[in-house]
Image 1: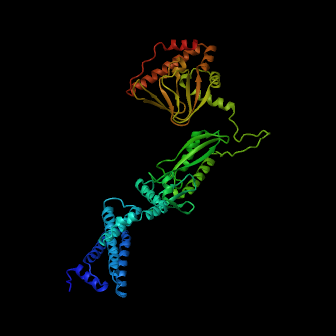
Image 2: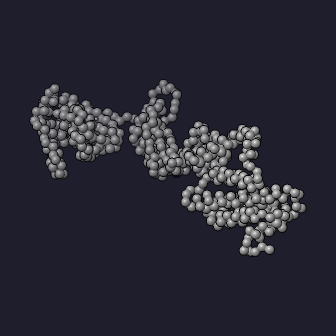
Image 3: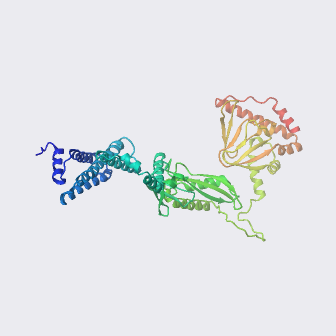
Length: 512
């Protein structure tokens, strides 16, 4: 009789009645396997209980073996021992499998990231081998003797499984280095078509689904030797590149500004990192622009690119910019340009109007303004480009026609200080134009800027014909400097000392 307080004894009695043999160790192993399985089922994180199926399967196999022993006659002499050891193997293996998931899932995953499936699979196999060795040892069989006695068989198996073992170790290396994870988009060789989303990484191969919805299985050994591009790491976004060609007649900064504005709010285009445009090449068709945009919708990248191109086309069309097409035809007839050039008289009148607003030139007559405008030239500067630099020598002044500039000055060893910001109608550089003195400040275009440059030679031709004009210019420059000095003093800045013998310096400069 067995007491209910002794479950191992009761189970041992059941084994005796069913199988015809008694073994308290097997009973305790069965109880241990059940306890560990119940512990895992009670403590496993949500969605991870399916990992208990191997343990349940091993216990079910042990129960099935007992059922066979109960149905069929008892085995002959020696058969009972064999069935006994087989039953113990399933019980020990089930206990070890449950112990594994309790440790690496119930305990480990509460403290750290879940282990990859390939590690759990390899540990499962190792624990199965351990269970086999334990049972063999108890049965009096030396496991080492089996290994050394079957060297030829081991060599044959090793040679046959070398590719499989290589894939297993490559899979371990992939999980150790983390070049990609499930859900990442990768390119697994140099072929652009071989880009896909990782859906599984197991002990033998990595499975991906390409943009064409093709299911591809790549051996881990092949991946370990390949150059892998991960479009999802280290950040979730990836960069896309689009190339657009625009005519030479339109300034690059204008085109870049239009394209950046067009991409704002386009499907899949991120605001941070912001899209950008750079001038990429000068081609036969026109100026090629490299558009860089960022998206997290890598699986929809074709739609992201396509809608961005649509936005760019419509934006350029609204601004009257036509994308040039490649052509090889030779035209022998004269064709009128799509946009007629601005008449020279209109350009000259616009320059005269700008010069008349310059207070320094108030003493000039209309014909002198016209002549000065005719001998001047218009210059175009990109945003961020310096017009003049402090310390450089110069002999011209500039009138702002379009855009804005920032004037900065710096003392030796000090940081630049913003002196002023100028807009259309303002002028700068008059001291160098009148005296040849080095530039006293740096002037940088804040945006796309157009200026009218009036050089010393243009003033010199007027002074040569009318020497008295030089005195008028000198007086106007002195008044301008005095006005600037008072403005600096009113703002709390130290005013610049007036240059000594200013009128004499102007006369000497124009006499050369």
